[in-house]
Image (cartoon, rainbow over all chains, first blue to last red):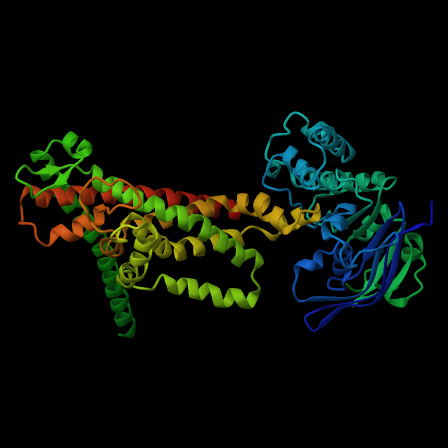
Length: 252
Length: 296
């Protein structure tokens, strides 16, 4: 496994209005690894995740300080288009959110937005659906409304939508929190397989999920990174007492 | 004793509310019945074909003619003109309010737009005569500016609050997750608005348009004041027209009761009623569709 840093945040502070949500965050994610972010609700892990693809640009009362980088690219530098950032850093949301359009259109939309030549699109759509192990289930009904798929299928469609753009990083914000165990298992399997092509950061409340999928795990508490280590160390040999208590289920 | 009193109050309250509820239905039914009754009386005297296809409305001539076409065309002309202005403007404003305007600006603008609906129609008609009319006249070289265009512009102003308010609600009601998904694949604000938000809000926007049309078709005082009211067959936007509503308002006060002319006015009112009913039903249909879609 390479130790090349793909994504990093340096000296990050973030406020919503007057409330400081992230405090002095320094963190980096190695290439082609899965990093899980765990911590009690409200600890800022989703907020941190969303600041990497600049989702906070949409909330007028968010104020961000610090440096975010993808490779050596400063993600918040002046003149850099946010749409470029988001096509390199894909995102899968907590609740599957397919567009109220057909399955095909759901993936085609991102391609059209990013000016992928028309002739290439059907191939890319198929490829993305294969990569997210959805192809065999939907290949005969690509024109069906995506909202009629099951919850797990919808979430895999959202993953397909993200990978279709060939991002370098995929951010996942509790992608399985609304799914049943079978769908969750499928998605976890998918996430692990995607690792060879993508760098993945996944926010999760599910301790087992972090242990099953992640190479590294970050424990956050009250807007700070408490501990960042290999998943094995975090769960079996935590250095910090807070981490130990959290992974043992004593709070949170 | 107390219990008996409470039951008595309860009973009479139920009686009161039932009466008021039934009263509304009775009034509505009465109006409808009166409209129908007089319309039937009219068609006993004039052939329906002459009414529908007649190109002349001249009830007081030596040879009276009761063709609804010029009135219907006038109404359609003014309404279509009003919608051509109000729909793009209304949807644009709604999109601005819901997607672009800051919270502060929105909090000022929305009540102002709603207040626009409270301006009496006679005041808007007044503006049409003293401001818009001379303006149109000097631009077009016509002797006066009281024509279909004038009425259309005024009606668009009157329909705007309805269209903006309902369309804004529809756009605002599009789930944030759709927008996030769109931004997430790199779409810009404009692309998200055009390709995701507006299509998702389409039923609500259609409802807004239909309610706006309903408002414009039924409006009387403004068009009466601003469109010139020539009973000749309308030739275009720069000519004076006379809508169904204006015709009824002008002639009803002077017509002798129980004459063919009197019945004729009820007949055109019935036509107007059918049109607005259809428009409102379509609007309601889309509103319900939008609600269902939102709940899903």
